[in-house]
Length: 51
Image (cartoon, one colour):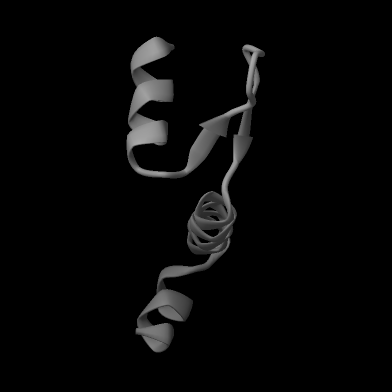
């Protein structure tokens, strides 16, 4: 789990809340997650049209 958190932080997708063990999405992380989820739910034909 630590490795995944470190990678997400390195890519700027999450940040740690000060003086806690919590993490929150950054603005860049919200954009990236939205795009990933949309691509995951889209059909291959839809992705080909968008490209």
